[in-house]
Structure formats: C-alpha cells, structure tokens
Length: 251
Image (cartoon, rainbow, N blue to C red):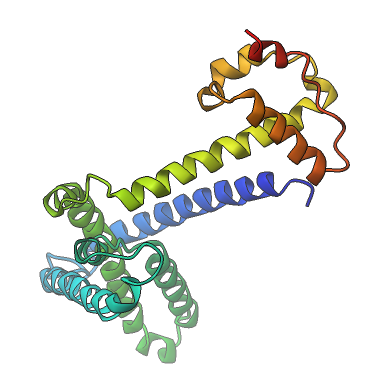
C-alpha cells in the first residue's frame, strides 16, 4: 500500500456504495413482500394486518431493550473518556438506528431458504411454508428499519433540544478545539509534503489561502516547525520549495 489515506477513502466510498446497494435490494424485496396478494381470500396479502401489529410491538420492545442495555452499562460509560451523562444515555438509547446488519442477515436467510426449498417433489412442497415464514421475518426486519428512520430519525432533533444537548459543554468544546488543531496540523504537513514534489513547485500560497480557509492564519514559526517535522519524519522527501510561500509571511 503506497498511500494509506487513499486506501482509507477508497474503502469508505466502497462501503457507502455497497451499503446503498444493500438497502436498494432490501427495499425492493421488502416492498414485494408487503404487497404480496398471492393467497386467494386474503385481502391483506402475505404480510397481514396482524403482522403489522406485531411489527409495532417489536419496534417498541427493541427500544425498551436498548434502554436496558445502555443503562446497564451506564456506570462504566460514565467513567470512560470524558464521561456520559444521563441525558446522553437517554438519547443513545432512543437514537439507535437499525438497518444494514439486520437486512443483510434477512436477505441471506431468505435466499438460503429459497434455495433449500426449490423443487417440485412432495418433500419440497411440504417445506414451502418456510418461504412464507422467512418472508414475514424479512418484512419485520425491513419494517424495523423503516420505523427507526421515520420515528427515531424524525424525532431525534426535537429530543436533543428537549434534553438540552444542542449546546455543547466545556469538555466537548475542548475536544472540538483539539480536533481543529489536529486538522490544521495534518493539512499543513500534507501541504509541505506536496511542496517537495516537482509538479507543485510553482503553486502560489495565495491559491492555498483562497481554497483552504483554515491554512490562512498559520504563522511563520508554525510553518517552519512543520517543515522541520516533515524533514525529520520523511527522510525520503526532498526539501520543500518555499519560494512562493515565504514572501507572504514578510508582508
């Protein structure tokens, strides 16, 4: 691997694409299941009104179970890192979205059952009912994902405001400031490394200041410290060309 950052971004984009494909396939199959009317005399189709009732009960039970799990470990999470407050634990319990893993497992189970029951002999026909049971299970998984999006997702903002978690605390402001400092430092180090390449030798600092706002206010001392750090850690990197950047620090 020559570029770890490029590899990281590649797998991040690949994960997003595969996740999108998973939800598209799952959504198509879920829509087909809940609209299935192959049984004569059953106006509600394969996924009946009773199943919808069970779905809402299951959704409520999952929220209760998540509350129990989060608060069971609250004495530990409250002492880890910067700590977790009661209000934050409440939001973590309520805001847990469910979807990708459940849909992936339900898709796998649905495909496996269809393969195992494929055939026309009597032995296979006796097990055709398992297809319906698997389809209902998939309907439950997709329904849970839909309800977490429509219910938890829509009400998450108002719940945050009601709990008073919109305004960050002092500790979290420090975390944000430290993150900004690291972001600027990493960007500056990457910029210095680019200046050592032949294709960027004529790149003017005014272009950088225009397109990378958080590098506008760096000091000359911080710039030279970054140059020394790159030279100390990247021995294979040639000396960066500072002809088009140093004049801006003498204005």
